[in-house]
Amino acid sequence: MLSQSIIKCLNCTSKGSKVYSTLYFSKLRYSNNVKSKLFVKQQENASKKIGPWGWFLLVIPASTFGLGTWQVQRKKWKEDLIAKLQQLTQSDPIALPEDLEELKELEYRPIHVRGEFLHDKELYLGPRTLILKGDASTKSELMSVSTQRNQGYLVITPLKLVDREYVIFVAEDFKLIVDCSETILINRGWVPNNCKNPSTRQNGQQKGIVDVIGVVRLHENRPNFTPKNQVGSNQWYYRDLNQMAQVTGASPVLLEATNDFDVPQGPMGGQTRISLRNEHFSYILTWYSLCGATSYLWYKQFIKGVRL
Image (tube, rainbow, N blue to C red; front, side, top):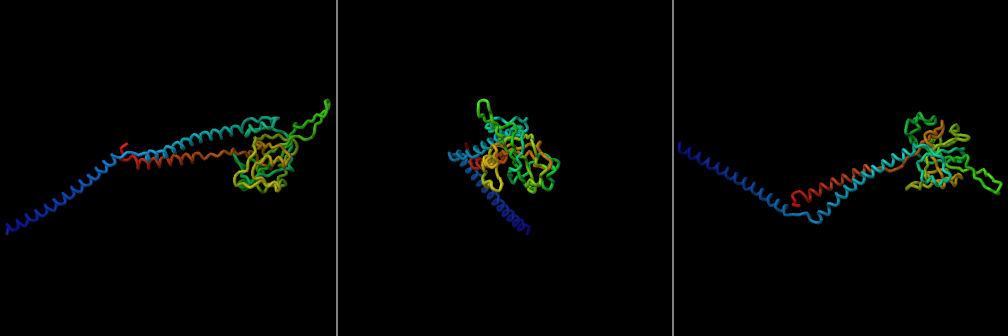
């Protein structure tokens, strides 16, 4: 009986050893097979080189990086230009040049003029949003907090200048001064829709000789998708100085009154917007993001495991 038990135990041990041996060698063969495949793949990758097409695709991340850097430079240039123009609008005013053609080189420069407003020839440019640098509720008695957020209009009024009469010499010892003083246009400022009619702001319609300081603004071409000016109904959508001059009989010269020209119950001055488009930061993000993404894809495709 004892010998039979010993024989059975030996048989069980032999079978277990065979199973373990089979599993061990199967695992070893699998491991060697995987290592062999990895080695073959590494050898294949090592034998590869980046072809002309791969090097050509490198142009994409390189170009986007260059464009991003260029936009950084453009952003700095635009910010410097805006700061320069803002500083120019705050410089000391100069007298109106005798030759009005000189104004073409003086945009945003403050000019001092004296004259009398021709309120019966007012023009209305808009609709426009109020431009503010401070608290509007303390700047004019005309506007309240509820109306500041509404759309309104810019009031453009001809100003008949003093000391700018036309002189006609008829004879050697005789001169004739004709009462046809030079007239220019003044953007007096912003009014809400409910004060567009001059009858609602009679106290703000200045009478007699006034001193005005305004910044030079030049002719504006009609922007895309902007309606044409409705001259007959006195509805102006953009700054066409030639048309405005024809309607009012003024010279095609426009000054935008500064904040100092605010009149109680009158238009609110300081409506000059330095309209320079500055979206370079979003362009910087776009180009550098594309550079990073395409560089990563190029690396994954052509560099990882590839012999240069």
